[in-house]
Length: 330
Image 1 (cartoon, rainbow, N blue to C red):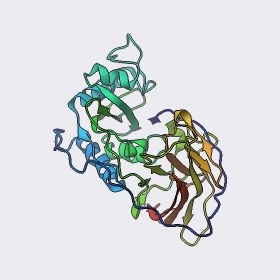
Image 2: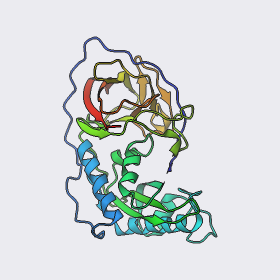
Image 3: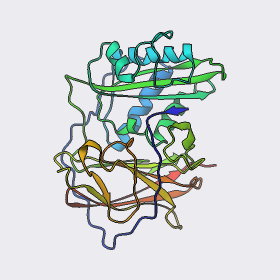
Image 4: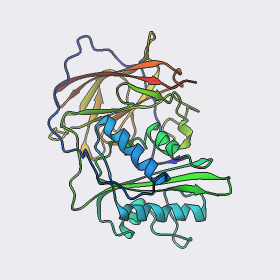
């Protein structure tokens, strides 16, 4: 089970530009390329999750996260709360219940002694034991939790272990990420476009059980295809000039573009940051800013190469990006 803030969607077919322009070169960023060796026990779920998240972040160009003992403490406290009170409160806590340390993730992180300028949380609970890699795979193969791969945060804390709720033996993974008030956020080069699934990735899941993400991003669908997320790095961009998407499509080898919903956060406090020059965009206030996610309305084909095409205007500059990934076998 995934839990996050979320919303619904509707969409349409993309429009293909006639003469795709070249992508501008990104300016230098400050992403973290090495972190201290974590102290998690060898063979532990915590170490498996730490390595898997950083491997994915490295692949897409987001930079690595460093272990924080204080975030380990906040994640561990919330893991204990869920273990004692059940999975009905994945992200929240109720004062007075056993193990209570704070209503919101930010409260629990502060209670652990970490002074954050920005923070977030990801949780996954699944039936079966020792399914730590499943936690990371499900966060990546989602709409809202995929933000874990793109976040500009510096530190991470992890609590992952088996537990035994009324529903049966399960694996519960809690991850807290944050940047402290004394740290600078890590960002890729200005003009960069990061994506997941990343270029040439293989064994990508071909189905997204979207109703396991709470709230459900596309509530009218029982299941969907693997979400494709792109994140625009726009430092120095005049936010009054929105990113204008002309094409965002997903096409199987030898086939035609799949029917999909494109979810974006069109505005919020930043103004009209994403607009369209063709494809229908669903405004979803729970999406991260400067991010677009394509959600196929049907599961993808297994063992199939898919091509992603993205054409947009970003800060007055033409962008043309394409890449491929291959889905896993049945």
